[in-house]
Length: 161
Image 1 (cartoon, rainbow, N blue to C red):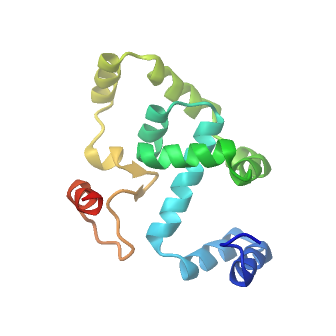
Image 2: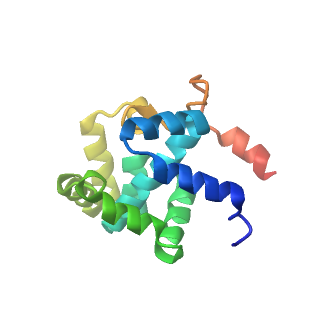
Image 3: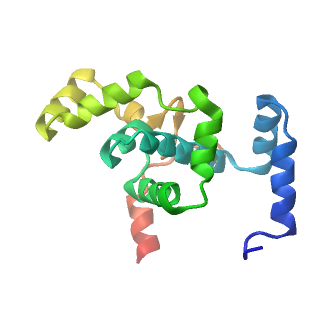
């Protein structure tokens, strides 16, 4: 076993394998993880499925709200990791794979020049709340308690400094 694989992580894997329904999975995740952790994991999986379709970082970022750092990490794991993302995407089939319409729309926007993309986005009249969300969840500004917080530029600068 590697450094992070131990008796406790073995127990976690066994617990995940014991779940028999989506409802049981939601209940377990809610008990075990914070809302932020669940949203982060689901965002990474959404990133992986779009990367699986060959979409660029800019399209993946626009579609999921993920930072390029997150996309890069997921891409590295997808390409050179243990194969977990690929296994899940393959086994979950159409329910997890990116829809053809979603990919076609994202790819067509990717082919536009930056000026045309800005024009297309302004015509779609996307508000900042919609741009920062994935589904109905705001991934950048929601805390586990559900309290909204502003973007993290100042906080990241402090962490980096």
